[in-house]
Length: 213
Image (tube, rainbow, N blue to C red; front, side):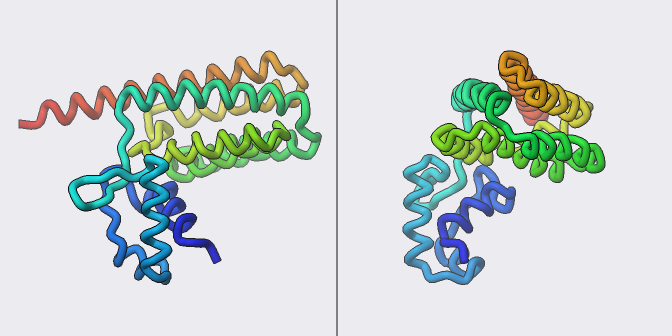
């Protein structure tokens, strides 16, 4: 059975708890069927990791500001690009086939942003594993944990889903060709386009809020 920390983190990652949501110790204990002591310890740990923040006496799921968002994407681009380069060098034929199969399967869920978002995480994690570098995988796990603090997926933006799968295919093709330079470049472009899309969506949402009177 998962511990309280993993259960709460999983709930944040899945969107059950979203940025700004208040987490109540007693409610979490009841929801997950655990005692309050491990829940309290898990909340303290998540606060230390900046996944939660204080709002008066309450703990809420943290929200990333513009600068944090930019910093996160910068680190993500560097680490993901390295993972793609290493995957082109170390991925087994079986791992390459799995990546190719993921892209093919994901065409079946176009139009479902949440399902695509989950599939996208699995695809990137598979690249991380294919790098065959445990320390890099650990660091990328931390980065992707922070990605859960984003309120929405860019895959909901018009046209972004099909473009994303095209970008994924380009990355897989480069890894399959054992072309580290091309795999790294393709991954960097992919993250750059995702960041640009997110900035456009954030600007649009902020603009919409500003028009409310």
